[in-house]
Length: 214
Image (tube, rainbow, N blue to C red; front, side, top):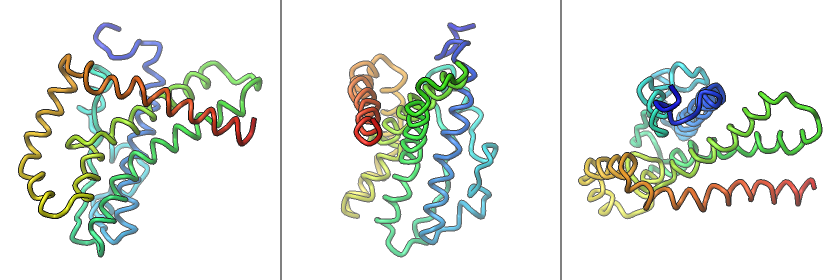
């Protein structure tokens, strides 16, 4: 059965637990920041919650187990409710990836302070997966490709006239994104980014904790 999955069967329990936590906090962060800036659309649709049932997308979750990539249910945001749509839009978009970064940092911190504490192997493996997979989600979601958060940030950073043009071609951007992710092009485009950025982020955690607490 392993050959039908992106992860081994031994990794699967850790992946499932990590994805439930990561996706839930990611989408909750979007909803929470949007609500704080005056948009209650997500709240009214029951998305301002840490209940995973309201955030997980069945197909997106299954795909990440099989293909190695997937998605949660996008949080609805109505920019018209923001007093400063561009600033609020950027902060709402950043909130999701930032939540994954913070989860990874917390998990790494627990590992760092637990060295020699005799934690159960299951818990250590879970924390390692929490670090790795949340860093992956942090970096992946910041890629400037629709429908990722990185693209939404670019939309709010560029002038309105450019935003209109981006919106016109967004549907094609999504197709390009899928082609890049599910074809061998991934090895020459996104994979090199992960090969460099992921170890750098994790090494950054280690450096910070060593400097502060080592």
